[in-house]
Length: 610
Image (tube, rainbow, N blue to C red; front, side, top):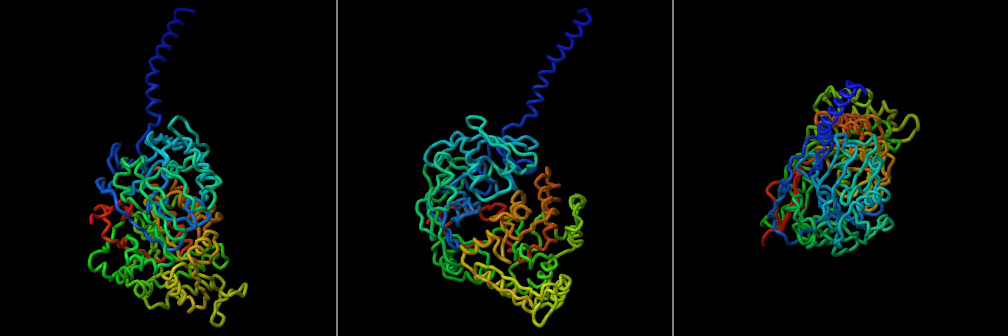
């Protein structure tokens, strides 16, 4: 080897050695680091080391009891399976995840950000192709056994194989314990950016105390959890009593300070809404979210309100109002034609209903994301929305695209002639003609008619008011009221023509739940919330776009585009929403000064001093 060659090799070696620290530093910089929280878009609002969630009072006193009232009945203590009707407030974001817990928990004062619960940290790469959770060493089951990564792996397969069907399961390629306290989920190439957060919110069960066979059955036998409460008493179909665990492992966590304040939680069931309300007036239960505006204005004139033992309070919210409406089951031939569905929207006189049934207290709902920046109503489509919708030129009506569309408005007479005429023209275009006092299909000779399935007297009254106008134009409609158990069984199997339903759990960060509500696959999956049977490539594409958006601007554009497609499909006759969240409660309860974006948060309330 020549001297020149030796010098050249020495120079190359020196350069390689010198580059090693830089390469290592670059690798460390690119390697994802454990974090205390994960946000769907942007960064978490609360820093590491925060002391409590902003809508909780960390000094809230412990003790006493709270009683919730529910309408209907229950025959199961397992809310994760299709079989049976489970009792509320066991695993319920509104009433509390009291028995079981998830790896992370939502801060309901942000659009969609999770902070550690069973997990002390979360690690996720920029492309979100996987997520790894580190389990807190202090996390314990109710029997004192530690929560392990193996429990997480077991729980995923348990719910996937036996629980309610959810489309995101198939996007998990692998789940495995990667260490003594770490577990990793690896996702398929078609997974969206929300899946790491959805995984963080799934329930975790103890492998040593729960079997697949028992889990799959509708049962009144309680399953062990790690949560702050345990079941103390069950009266089948009537009530469930929860008792706070003195040895609950997580009571000092920041995400738990100011929560779980009652020693006892009682969930009482009543056969119908009238019995339910009378029970509240008698003080049988404490907390009453009110959805009937006429009752809110006139029904609370009883002694306990007048002497201050019951308080009425309106809580402002910062989230979309949700879609409340009469839902068409488009699987039924009568509703297969979009023009028929559009025509039927002209026969609902909201102005008359609002004034005569609800004393003018409601506002008309027009968007599936009403009252938020996510709504497309009144806004022309942006360039990004137009780009997303370009492959589907027939999916959105021109008036919806340019922002000029709104639900039909009437003169409030209950029989607005202009609206009746517009609806009849659409029905004629759809192939119907008037024969005597009925509308009949010219192709089949079948009269136009259907059934509205309802569960409560309030919904029956609303449906009958709608039916009175439908009969004017020759449409035969039957309103059938059934008990709660039969109602929920029928809608789970899509055995109905039309129902009144409220997609109330709206969010500033809609995500994979939109698949469960509106996707083509959910339309064929019993137990999903796609009651309308919507099956549209445009809907599927907009859901994919909102799930893959990396910044807020593109996310908002995708949600508005979805809103436009849903509105144009006329899957719903929109009804109304309350301007605020109305809550009546006995003053033996107290609450923090500040609510969350979602309004009242009863999981943070406490027993008032006598």
